[in-house]
Image (cartoon, rainbow, N blue to C red; front, top):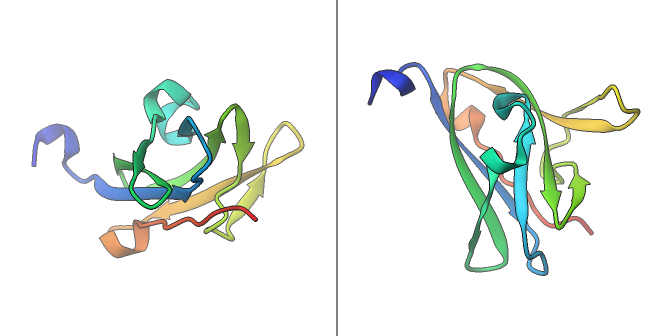
Length: 106
């Protein structure tokens, strides 16, 4: 592991959105910059982004074809300054606690 990733944990973000043409994830871990969170389309209609994050609490949202989505696979959320909600993830020292598996919004 490089020094840049020392102490960081592998976090896998997934979102099922088979009709989407572009999906990004942005949040407090990347200064809400969608360009830093472009997700890759995977077989089966889902999108994935793997990040190396230090332990801590992070707020985030998916950007799907220009629309903001909460993580439908994560019931943890908090209010944001714009009157909406953000999903919340706690990255722990235990790597399995940091994984998020999301499913399609119905």
